[in-house]
Image (cartoon, rainbow, N blue to C red; front, side, top):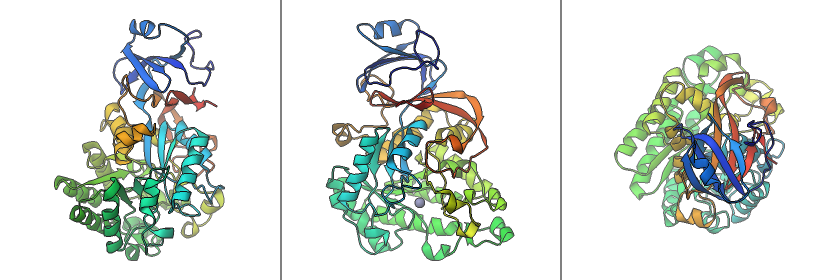
Length: 460
Ligand SMILES: [Zn+2]
């Protein structure tokens, strides 16, 4: 990757120091040279002349980034890292390596571990493991209810005050279905500007549910998962958030009706945000006809009409951001019959490519909007763009500009390659995109000026 050889293949030292990234296209704009010194971007200039002046004075490692798109480091609001407890599926180290390879510099780790992340002790453990691994920042999500059992609030204040500085709380995997508990959680987090991220699934309407309720569930003879089970909870929670003046985030929106409800809540000025997964932007319930449990996920894959509505909602900003819901599972949990198999799909290493395919190639988003939906907005929702985050050295979602932390991804939009889960850094292989031809490749990821990925491989 050095200018000396002019090749991206030559190895550069994976050390923090001074880097001159030459000819990158920030947010798809014209070629620009970007100087990184220490943890910060310290200078930018149009490619051609400026770079030489930028790099004046002292050792600098050159990186040829011609034709690569530079985006702020991606932020995932919804990752399952599985540690502690299910290290056979993923660890903080393997999951954050996967994240870095996908262009992420921060991930929010969901609380449904064993033990559950419902105390200051567990969230601090996960946060420390993230720091030790060093591939990307790990922001633990705290459980809303103790043990995720839906009956008693967890120690929200203690988790917020801990070293992990938890601001996002979720029982994800389960719905906080008790309206009184949901109201109390929303009220509680106002004291420290927290947000409740809801997994919207009315439990009684989805007992035994396996696939989207509709034509496919009838054809396959599997129990249907009605859209209303998601939409009813979202509507209720929007009303509750408005009633108590608190912040609600809706996880993995999957139906056209959900998009409509969120659009309505936002039109009222309520503090409601939402995410959509890459798989719900690209895949439909037609795939379940194969009975291959790699396509089994919660919420389920929906219809083409839902996919179109989710894409439109992400394009117009009704849905704030893309979140992976990366849910690794060991082979034995997936290589079984449909009704026995675990729900969930991996997604960190393919998310940007899937968004490229579903949103950029279709003309629905430009690269600036991709940066907004995959970095700026999720960082804001996860409270990583405020002053407290800056003091903790954890600021993400900043512009690609001088003065910003050097959290960056360099992405080559040109290659089109088959997805091969065997080559993934994740410990699990349950990618629904296996064998699919997708555009693009993450070439490099920088976390506070240190490359975590170079030449498309882990830097250390
Ligand atoms: Zn969920």
